Amino acid sequence: MRFRISENERLKRALQEAYFSRESADTGEDRQFQIMGRVRRAGPLKTSAWFLPAFENLVWRIAPACCLLLLTLTVLFTSMDLDHGYDYPGALAAEMERPTLPELYGLEGWE
Image (cartoon, rainbow, N blue to C red; front, side, top):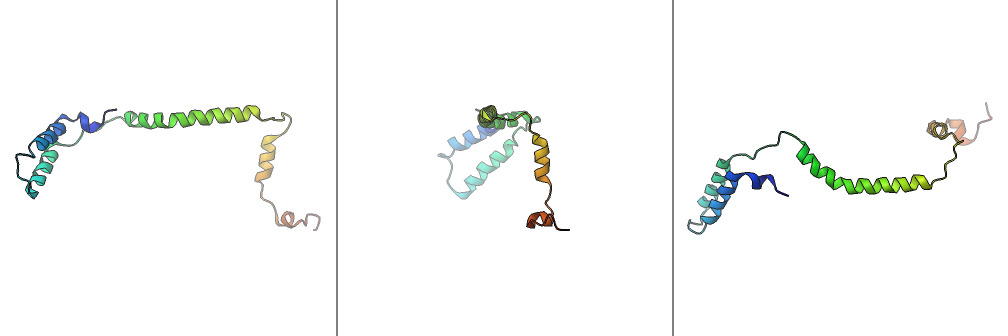
């Protein structure tokens, strides 16, 4: 995998020149500022106008986990014994209803 920084030839040349000239130049604080000045003059990296190359790396990192999750859920659902006559959505709706206060305390027959 190549990084964007290795594709910028001007930056690579500036860093190579700074590396090779370090032995011949003085080692004072000015030298660090000169090197950083060269790097700044090299300019910014080329930006990618399209998001897909960066997104592709993320997708390939997540793909094995997604496949494993899909396989696990498939095995789980095929091994479950589902009753086709049972009203699953109705049971879910009944569970989501909020209980009233008499239902909570068992006073359903009192009015």
